[in-house]
Image (cartoon, rainbow, N blue to C red; front, top):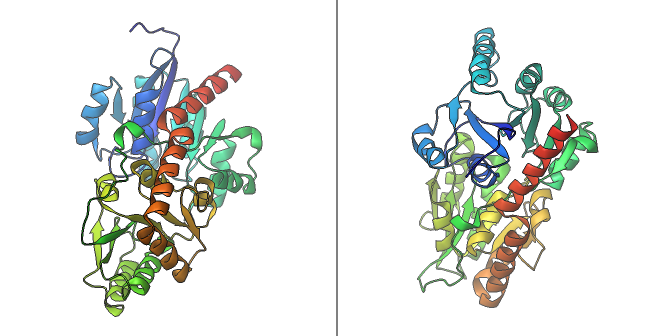
Length: 373
C-alpha cells in the first residue's frame, strides 16, 4: 500500500501496554482501524509494563512504539526533570501533528508540554475523575484543543467543570466484535453462574451481589457467584470475605482475581451483575452484550446510556439487594427473556458500539482539529 507523506502524524500516549487493563482495547482498536493511508500512528507508553506481550502485536500491525515519560510519574522535582528530559526522545520520534492521550490522570503536565512543543493535544476522558484533583483537571481541559467524552455522563461532568461544548466531542467506547464470539446457547450444567467483573473496591459494591445471591440461595441451590477483578482495596476485600462467611456462601462464591480471559468467563456464565454506585460508561456491559450474556446493572448514568431496561438488559436502583435478586432470578428462570436480552444487546453493540465506529469518529476528530489549526 502506497502512503502519502502528507499523512496526519498522531502520537497516542498510554499509561502502560498491559492487555488486561484499560486502555488496551481502545489503543489496539485505533492501531487496527485508523486508516494508514491518511494517518501515521506512533504509540508512546509511560511504563514498560506489558511491552513483552503487546510489543509483538504492534509489530505485526507495523505500528511503531516506544517508552517515555510523556508526563511526570510523580510530583517530585526529580520526576519532573526526568519527564522534561524524555521530551527530547518524544521529539526525536516525531514530529507529530496530534498528541492524543489515553492516560487517565487529571495532571495537566502532558497537555502543557504538548502545547509547548506545538502539538495539537487531544485526550479521552473516560471516568468521572475519582480521586483526581479538580483544579488540575480544569487546567488540563483549558490547555486541551479537544476532549473526547466516552459517554453523556462524562460530557455532563465536563460541563460541570466549566468546559465548553465546542471543546467536547462525544465518542462512545467501541468493542472489536471480531474478537468476541457470540452465542446464547448454554450447555446443560448443574450450576447457574452469576458473574461480577470489576476491581475489588467499594465503589463497585460487590457486597450487593453477594447479598442478592444469598437471598436466592434457598430457592436456587445451584446458584453460584464468581467475582473477577484485581484487589485494589484490601480492607474492602476482607469485608467481602467476611460477608461471604456470614451469609453461608463459602461454597457458592469464588474470588477469581485479575483475569485475562473475561470473555471466556462470560460465555460460561448465565448473567452479569454490575452493582456500582457510579459508572462513567460501563465497558463490562458491552463485553457481556458482545458474547450474548444478559446484563443486570445499577441504574446510574453510564449503564443507563447503554441499557434500555427490559429490552437489552435490566436496570436496578443502586444498593437495592432485593431488586438485584429479582432481576437475577428473572434471567435465570426465564429462558425466553434471557435470549431476548442477549439478542438485543448484541444488536446494540453492532449498531452503536463497534470499534470501527469509534475509530471512525476519532479519525473525523483528528481531521477536524488539524484543519482548524
